Amino acid sequence: METDFLVIGSGIAGLTFALKAAEFGEVAIITKKEEAESNTNYAQGGIAAVFGKNDTFDLHIQDTLNTGSGLSNEKAVRMMVKEGPRLVRELVDLGVTFTRERDTFDLWQEGGHSRNRIIHARDLTGREIENALISRVKENPRITTFENYLAIDLLVEEKRKSRCGGTLIFITSTGETESFYAKVTIIATGGIGQVYLHTTNPRIATGDGIAMAYRAGAQIANMEFVQFHPTSLFARKNQERSLLISEAVRGEGGILRTRKGTPFMEKYSEEGNLASRDIVARAIDSELKKWGDEYVHLDLTHLPARRIREQFPNIYKACLGYGIDITVEPIPVVPAAHYTCGGILTDLEGKTSIEGLYVAGEAACTGVHGANRLASNSLLEALVFAERAFKSSLKYIQKKIQDDKAGGLQDSISQFSHLQISASSNPLPDAIILSHLREEIRRLLWDYVGIVRSTPRLERAKREISAIQEEVEELLKTSATTSDLIELRNIATIAELIIQSSLTRKESRGLHYNTDYPDRDDRIWGRNTLLSRK
Ligand code: FAD
Ligand code: SIN
Image 1 (cartoon, helix red, strand yellow):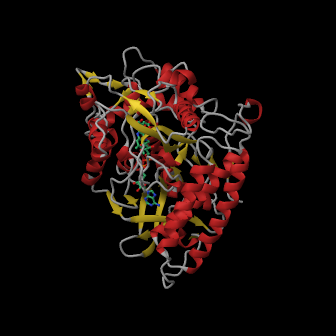
Image 2 (image 1 turned 90 degrees about the vertical axis):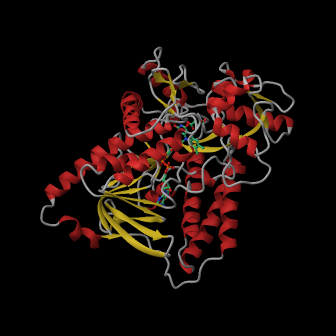
Image 3 (image 1 turned 135 degrees about the vertical axis):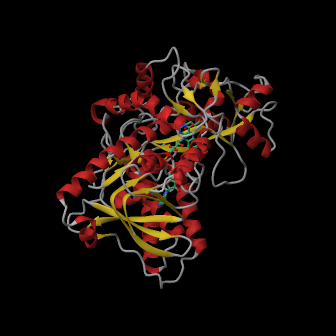
């Protein structure tokens, strides 16, 4: 199989890239489940962009830099903030319907924002965007979407190991593997939430793109900065994905209280309930430990019931499904893994350290978020940097065609290889062992590499993950390939990267808090943590 632009992933980053690239060439989107299944589809709060009358680019830039705790790349932040409003208007032209207030967007408030600037479609912003983009993709004759195509490993040039020519795929419906060649490959595979026991992310979020890029030799940055959303619904049963209770709920006046009813956020921050996520998540963690409680309460009952139902129809309905009427009773909430600020290191044009390989969206580390992400900056970053990646990949293709008029893609195909995968004649791996190992990793990360870390716990996690990885490598050699096994390998790799980066950073900053190094140290640690496979 062969194409001009190969897009891995069908969330906001992949779909945005694909629609732009299709104006210039053939595009293939491969996606490992149904096309809409993505983190994008579950986004609630919205997109941060400067539309408010009393808002300015400088204020949005400053809020983003403050939240990033000294590690954001200011140039990247400026680009994102300034290019954002144009791309939000483009979304409207593509058919996205945002909630409006008279002749302008209705703007929500979220933690860390000094102004109301969250454009939203009630509390189902992600679904609205995903559906509109998918509709446009379906209408486009130059884009083909391959559902249930799971990227296993990148095809890299054998000699130099520094050029990407596509990816090896596993077709989940048939169990076959194939090579998909492309002039340009873009990783838009989203986040890593599933590496933790409690997460707001759906099952697809296993960090595949980051793990593949690491195996292929790309540079990976800042994996210690995992964002825990302070408020996901507490459920007694262990779930694959916890229901998010949007930060906009606190923006609208929701109050965090202990189970006894005492508000506690004022103790931790002047911003109270609207402090940035790292502060709120740690405050909840500390209250839970202090009182030995399993959850705290998020209380909206002082707000008019009609307003709650109108503003948050999805959250209201979903909570009713758990037997909680949020207009008359508080919501039991706990923090859950939500977002990775780290990822595949890229420049401001979405280029990775491997030629022909681009990245956008949550899988990328563009430098925007630094040590912590400002709420609702993720969809914005994905939009802006998907477009930038498209522009630079187009230049790359055009130059390649000029340089290589006679040869073209066909000639170079034989040069690409991937890491070995096991023979399909091997027996299927034992499903119980795979699910047990997956749970083991998720619990290990939750217990030892969570909101508050310590060096002995991280060391212990490192030892345990390395033993699990040995077991997974053995399974890869002796069993037939399955999607569960491929994801297990990726989850284990992501766990390794998070642990390694956390051990490397000997300070506390933003989302990374280590009790053995509780202070921020700008002299030594005001820089990215970089990892690459030797
Ligand atoms: P995704 O949307 O996650 O898409 C990744 C795609 O890659 C999927 O299609 C997936 O199936 C595919 N894929 C993955 N691995 C493979 C593979 N190996 N082979 C083939 N395909 C693969 N951010 C905001 O800015 N505002 C919000 O209000 C907001 N709310 C959120 C609420 C929730 C519950 C969650 C989970 C996240 C929220 N975020 C929000 C974060 C934001 O939604 C994501 O960061 C963003 O959508 C990521 O987009 P993406 O295109 O990079 O990845
Ligand atoms: C939310 O609605 O709280 C999620 C917003 C985000 O992750 O940016």
